[in-house]
Image 1: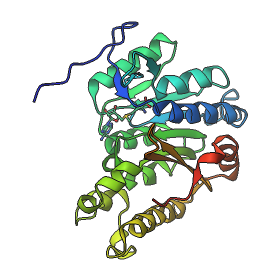
Image 2: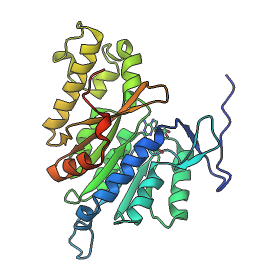
Image 3: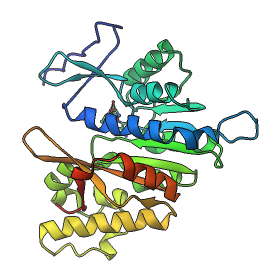
Image 4: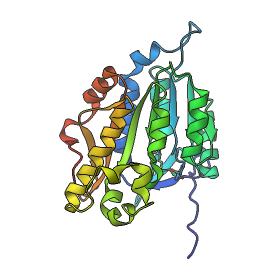
Length: 277
Ligand SMILES: C[S@@+](CC[C@H](N)C(=O)[O-])C[C@H]1O[C@@H](n2cnc3c(N)ncnc32)[C@H](O)[C@@H]1O
């Protein structure tokens, strides 16, 4: 198979990824949350020096700029959106940015530095980077993590469990399409669901109708997150494609009620949905 040509942003000569137009919707939520949580974030920022800090975390960052498919439009990726939103309100004390692809990691590092940032960039599988990032951060700080993998395979529950040792608000991209298309494959023994929602087999009946199986699996996942002491906000936001196809949910989880209240204030109430399919 022919290798796909690497695309570059003519503005900076660095690589870009390709995204659907709906990527702007998740970026808008990241931006709004960073803006609306700025007053709370400020309380964690030095001086005085005993304040514990407020970091931004991405484990699946992309290169920092993306081309919208079938257009000539190049947009900021989530790390740049987050950096700019924080600079315009209350800057993060640190940015820990990871992408398994070294070229993307190098590109996002260069782009954030060109804006004046000092990110700490990693190029590891997310489940490796998460250990380094958690070890580097003060658990008493107030951190914000955006988890934006391509698919459920990347979203191991261990990542969420490890991050929840920090005081952290998390915005998690859960691919509905992936769940719909790969249900059979993922539910095999040793399949993706065993890392996405470990223990699901003992709690979710695989033999029920497909739609109720998916809903039960997601309920189990949410319940397991709650057991970590961090609670999902009431409505998850469903992002749909240009033809109305269900693409992904944005699930916001936080250990404190203020975080959930802030999220409730900015998410689009028209898109609130139960996690059924
Ligand atoms: C959906 S894209 C991220 C887009 C980015 N958050 C944005 O909005 O601009 C997912 C990224 O995850 C990276 N990736 C894939 N598998 C990974 C893994 N196991 N660990 C870390 N990064 C991974 C890919 O290289 C890709 O850049």
